[in-house]
Length: 482
Image 1: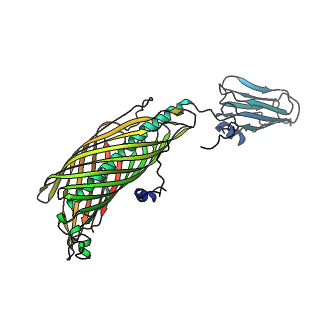
Image 2 (image 1 turned 60 degrees about the vertical axis):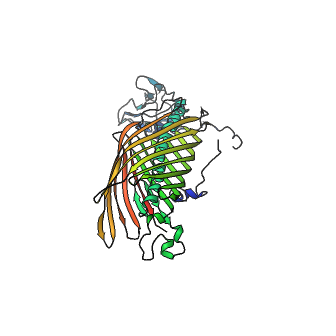
């Protein structure tokens, strides 16, 4: 089961995430653990320590929160004989009583049936100035911890299925958009630094035909500091980073970092390879559970500029992951692997100083998770699942001269997404807000670029509009040509 495991700091693709995250022999049987119930804690805090005197003939206290096995010990002290009384009751009956008028110790053990709420009463049957009184001091020994139930193991399966689907969907979007952006940078050629919802991308475009023509040419610039023509920029190295946050029924975060290298075989065809790492941590309010994980990805991508205003791109990748899941008293760890493929068509239409980029994209991700046994001894079978997203929409942008040769380009994008998924889990996945079907996604931001091609773009995105769970992303692309 442990054929692959990501060790932070041990692989190059994880370097961008390292700053963000940093079978033994059977043990001897241990005694059953104790559980400090609220009722027992209150008794040890003194709530059942009562004193009755002729001036205060009747004293009582009601306490709830006891659990089966809680053992209460009452030390009763009577200063004189008489008709003094002490007793404890539940809501209907007297459970234990003492009218012997003698000092001593009484013990009561909670059964958990009708005695999780108890009332203690002491009473002196005489009036002042008689000096007789009765004093009770109480203590409580907690009973054994409640035994976990198989419900926790069933909830663990639901955490596994629901959480891994969400992780796959979020990671699939990040990885495919990163590869697509890398293809776009190779063809665009003049935007080395940008930061937006698709990630932070570093685009190093080298010119193999001019490497000996001076420092500027080695960096992708002419001798006068301007960018070299696009057809002379063959190599393209980039790096994306994207952080996503979930709200509502699922709370958590997911970070993906991806690096890639592309080569333009012809001015209109680019081939490349990429590697990446991810880390995520999800909380499920409806399941009282948590899913954490890390993973690494390798893959290849390609882009073909079919027409000056139309580009086709696609990618394929493989990921290895490890998960840690919790639900109630049940915990479990398991490994998994994924395959992901994607494809898309992107337009590039200029209307004056306004650029319109319509796009149609699709990705599908298949995941296989190993079988494992949870901490309660329940066996969980291997799990096969898939997730996908089809998107239709686009981006509109407009460039403004910001002075000193700087160009400011704000943008707005809007997509309609159709998400779909399924698995072979024996336990049905509950409605946690991670829904399949139609939803909206929108993003906005701006880029600032220099005459030499250095640029920075800041932006954000929110998806899942129209559903219970929204996915917020803050990410970008950075680049410097050379």
